[in-house]
Length: 83
Image 1 (cartoon, rainbow, N blue to C red):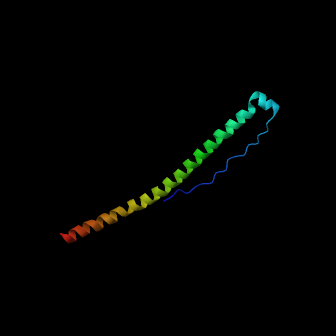
Image 2: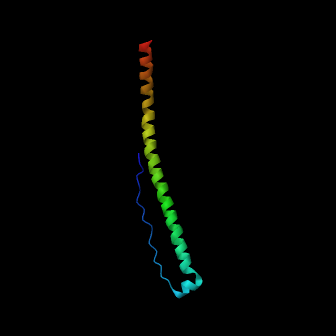
């Protein structure tokens, strides 16, 4: 079973380097924000994908668990036949 990837498109931020931005460090702040926002977006996408995978596996486990009583009865009946 593989992950079902959810597509995530982060917002685009326009960077306009200006002299004032260079003096105040605004350009550096925008660069760092974009860098860390990309990392956060990637982490969020990974979490969403893992949640989808776990939900799928949970459904499979519930189906298997619902079949347990029937299988148990079949095994007990088979053991009684052998005895």
